[in-house]
Length: 274
Image (cartoon, rainbow, N blue to C red; front, side, top):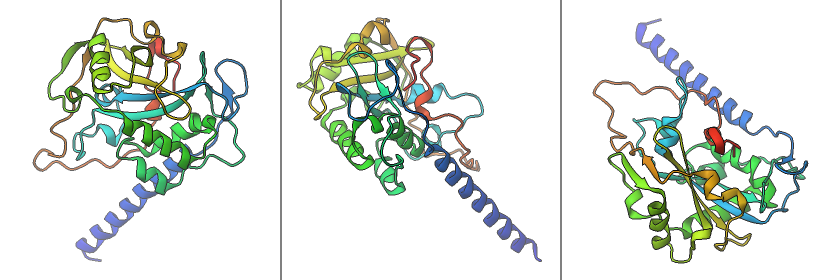
């Protein structure tokens, strides 16, 4: 066998192995854990008071990846840099929240549906995780749940200041909230909360509350501002604006299996992981 032929065979084998690992990772993510409620035992689908739409600041998430972890969302060679991304749509009680609700059918998210969400939720595992943990408690199937999530997300205007952040900045917490209120006149102060933490009180996420039919509504105690971020000022890490321009001669790394779902990055006092 000639050397070029051997290289081609090896390349095909490596690609097949990578594809198998990716499919295995998604299959693992589709497994169904036990049902539970943060307040009182078993959670019931459709039994909740309001939704919290959660927008994560992607640069903070990427800064918190553990050494050796890989996420395409954070790869500097990725063609798209991320700012605010849709973390999820969470059914909430006025105090506490349901999670992993038992449904008649296994909460499987079809790959075609996953692909339709990747423009606003930059990880297949995140899409799967959010439906299993939160979407099952909405009383909706995967398509209905993500249709509502996209509808609500699409009704919001991200303030211009946070669409392209080239340099790190420090902002007032209330200034960020005011920016969202000005960009979205239908919102009121009691409908929005900001989460921060870590080095320099980094911006983590913005939560905006909606009724079951997708209209802005006051938040419950889960979004109490003193619980999510008490700091007056927050550090905002910059976006990866050089994404898509790899260094000359540098080879792209293969996508390694993610060790933890992207939504499990919230440590500290806010650490009731969603």
